[in-house]
Length: 319
Image (cartoon, rainbow, N blue to C red):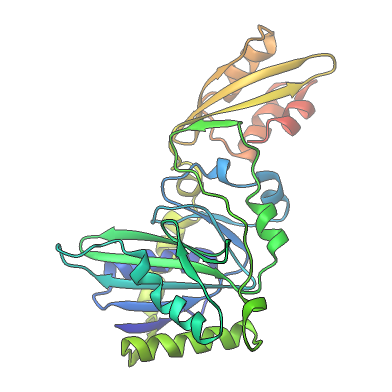
């Protein structure tokens, strides 16, 4: 196993780098990194149903989809992210979160923190979650990765993933929400995140016998950047890849409320239903069917085509 140092804090690059390592590097790999604030959803999730979209949009927090399953996690200031990329044999238990998280659990114990694996893939202190983990298998190579809340802004984390329940209906995998906490208050001796990360890296290297370490080569960096441009920065991957779903909303006009059920396939509106027979429903169908569920596209269509009432619709149709 080798240690690859990620020098970037760009979430798009760092998430793309994991896929690149899994599919293109023969060595087993250990990586640690930090991201600027972002939300990362699981491969099989409905992105829009997992996030507080108005809050995320207002605060310009990027939302990305990763190649592994599992739930949505916040990555950003005060967080440490880690990856283990290993080869597995047919006879092995390929997805083994207890084994994958053991280095972190053992390291935390040396600092006086009693953490444990709870449920399928979460690490907790007591009954509060400190880490979410996920896995992805590709042709005998498996990625186990996770994020650790060390000294994060918990209000920001909670607000970013606070969603309104009952508005969405789909077969997408939903996140299991849990009360969260940071690791730092539980340390026997206080330290900052940089010190924690450096000490964890040294611990893993010693425990796993890692002696080789490097950064990405110039060619590897360029290929990861290409993957960012062709996949990870695209709306089609981060939002459009979501499983089919429907969305319920109510448009409040001057003296009436119009209920709408909007059906989305591959990120685009394919059907609009309502118990209201107003001509406005036909107008909505005429101008919105086929459009991606993306704020700028929807607002542009409404502002351009539905005169007189467009400000109301533009403000309320926020998927």
